[in-house]
Length: 552
Image 1 (cartoon, one colour):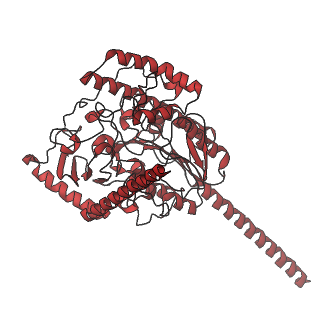
Image 2: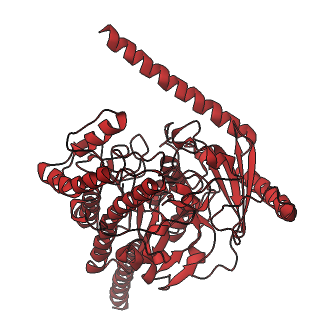
Image 3: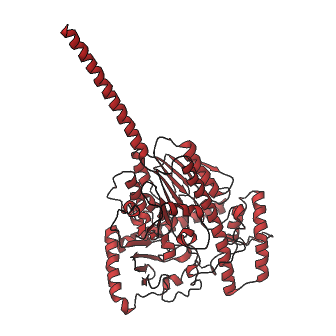
């Protein structure tokens, strides 16, 4: 009898044990799933050529960007964010890899990018993230590291752009900024797996040249006259590299290609005119009608005024501002749509949202448009970030951050070990208030010369107070700036004896940076040779094509 009872007890014990084990296993699986979901989602918003001066959160009154400002108001604004190489494709390569241009191989816009190398999206995939890339990437080849990609072909068009969705190319009617936003929200709402943390790279074309506004914003700034920067008529004294530029609003900004002064007769005698006419012809008849109604009165008024000299420069500056800022309004709308989607779908609390640009841009400073130089306006970028779980609303950060730091920062938030080959640093503790120390210097390089806009090859170092730049190749000049006394960088004090100690310290800092990041004059020469050889190869290929055409 005791034996029977004992067996019954044993069976019950075994059943209880099995039940406990099953419950524990189920609880463990649930916790694992919860932990997986608890990894923060990441939305990385990048526009193209968006100057920090054109974001109202930075205290400038050029325009109003209420939705971009929301990110700063609900999180952090970083006031000293910079790039390592101020040009589109190299900047994006640095962002993806966390490595300087001379290490990731994408030093200029011309030569290809190696997608086979590692990037932070690939690392996030390995720990369960679903990843997507939408909009402009400007890196040839099939994007790697993304479960879903729907990217613009090359630079992309403002109207009726071509996208490549997971390898399939298609032309989409409409306006590029709204289309990009629609694709991003469609992926968030319908295409992703809802039980996985996600990474979304949501990248806009605007406000890249040639600044073609959406129809609804064509008249937004028509009646506004903008006050030009104090150095619009810079004479470049003491700065020979700056003096040889080809990016001046007055002398280099094309009236048709850039400012849409294409008259009713449709005169298209020059290459620039043909290029703009091609963009105009992508519009629907309804869109063309809206454009004609907006621009024809401006064209007629411009012809009647017959402007010259400074009057023409000021007119061109204002036309530039009106179109450039109008394209940003559509970008701001898109940011608002994405933020509203997160809030409406309960994703706001656990989603990191970052807004930045691939580089800064000149809005008349030094008389310029475009970027490339290490001077502040193109070297510095907007950077705003929100993550309610960690970042206090209204946080202001003055630390020196670079696009080199995005990859390690995102990996840090996802709990991924940061590979020692990554040269950037996570700024997570900087924005959440835990960091007591941060870097005190940053390094910059620019390689694309001879090239568009005639910006000389250069490299340099910046600290909180000073900046040292070396221009080289067909020139050998040094520039030193006291950023506290001369924030507009108008006075090169390199040969000023009162700055001898500063000059010596900055040279040491520059050498430290070059050693730290594995750069050298020898490497510069190697990049130059490959650059010139590649250009020569492309010229020969074009000549061979022309010869073949002539034969046929």
